[in-house]
Image 1 (cartoon, rainbow, N blue to C red):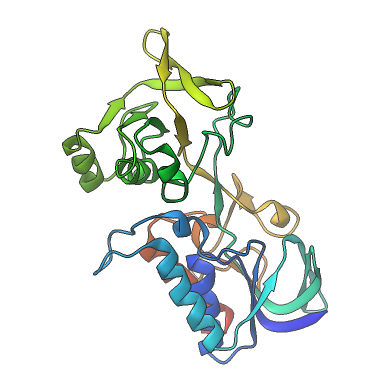
Image 2: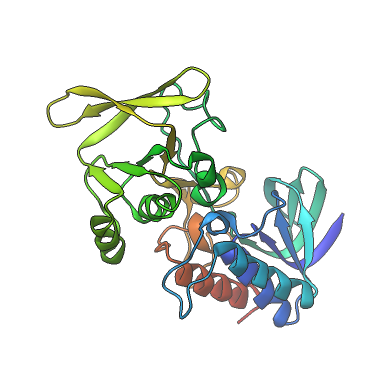
Length: 297
């Protein structure tokens, strides 16, 4: 059992930022991540916009990871099972054993929602993907479908045009992506948008061959031919291990303006926190703010 002054759960951008900041403030800090890949969902983003110089998501994650190593942050691989207050500290149970910490920063992020339709689970890795930069080259010259109308769906659709002949976006209620994404999609002849529609089933034998789609206005059904399906319909927070520890609202951690949860000493930042706005800049600001508060700032 190891003991720390600050233990950060989650190696996404908010968690990495929090760990770097806590270590910079002189605290013995550990970063707990269940996956060997750091950066969270942004690691799968081919090019992150909104920066002074756009950069691949993986590069941003690697830069922060390097900073955390230079500042002496200890990296622990494991999945959290529970957090409980014990004798003025917190016991953090993981798949690799138990650790204790004076303060805990929860930055475990979220996971992409699945469609929950027949054929989806069957074809994961055989035509169903949630990473355009990883799997896009597998669909060279093919027709693919992106399900969703938000920023993430728009980014994936734009990235897929580098490999695919055509990309169809299926949107339940229309394109909701920010203006610059919407303008780029409208100007890209390889992308078409089908509004007021939902996917009912993913079809195929050895691999994906199409999707069965329902028009939500007139309930008519059609089959669209495609070689791949990329669902991007939002995310859910990874907070199951917190159910008996702090107050949650629809799975999101409730915090005050110092990012502190309803149990003193537990803080939250990024996609797990109620009120998070969803942009990279917000993740960095929240990670730094939570660390400052956890260190007594």
